[in-house]
Image (cartoon, rainbow, N blue to C red; front, side):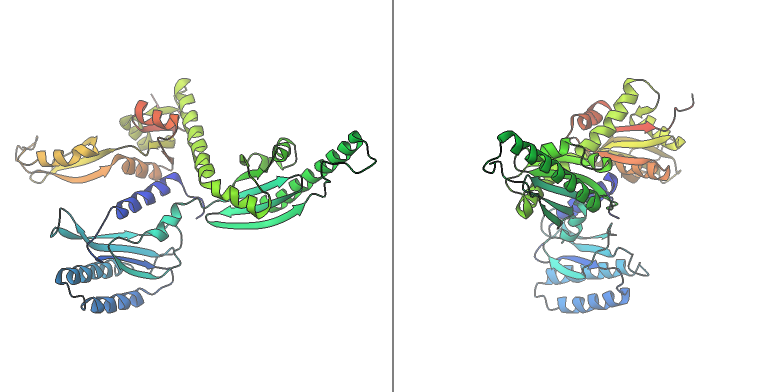
Length: 418
């Protein structure tokens, strides 16, 4: 899947940030990447061999931790009848909980969003997440046109893959006129050739970029003002004109000019997402400001709208730090829920010890589920067929979502019934 939703990116980033925070002793953390098509039995056989090899480790603690991690990986692996279509990644290892001697085996299973093409087993002091990190990078295709009055270069950028598709020359004479020509006549001829060149650039761009189904945007670059003259003219197909996301200065044309744009691409592509976020938020703010009844905000009201199935787009701040806690009495099965800041959840759980149940008065209350509001509401939205947008706080509108609307808002399909 080339088109990654903001929710998919958020979930993967969250998992990888968590894994990156884990640090083991020595080489006690196991990372396993299994590509699609591998037999589970083959991978298990390899792990058994690695378990045997680990018996040669001199340190008793390290040997035990590595072997325990391998066993956990094998146990998780055996839960799959076959490797999923995109492959399987398992991390397991002894993670210190509170200083030396407090290690506990933690195991994480990740189904990659796209096929992994590597078969890898590694023991290290950290989990090896580099291959999964690649999936967080922009995967859609961007078109690049670098031009000046001497020529143009066309390229595509997809993830890390840059391809120079075509280079053309303009055939336009330099700005110094040939002997015997009047300055005015020379400029007219040069201008006519420049227009012909721009038309050719537009025709090549149409042939190269229009067939690309997942074309996300077009970046135009080059030295001097020529690129602006081209952009302002009516030389590109209207569908490509709508996709121009940046026009930037480069010192060169040709491959060097394209590489200059690629160097600046991370900031350009980041800006594209900000524009998308601003557009989504501005639509929500319009509905709120004009009191159309097609917007709602706040956890309770948004939850109700999701349950009614009337949400078109759910907006969640990535800075949302609240959790929904389910409490149950093990004596009478009385249950209730509370929403609170993540940082308060642990002390709340401790405060339940010895606290009587509101129904049967027996002190047997316990937390049975602790779920982040963002994850819970996103799951409700997916079940209801609503779009989910995770909004950063790096734009003014994103900051407004967090501070003014509690980090939870929705654009509705239609007005809720009174």
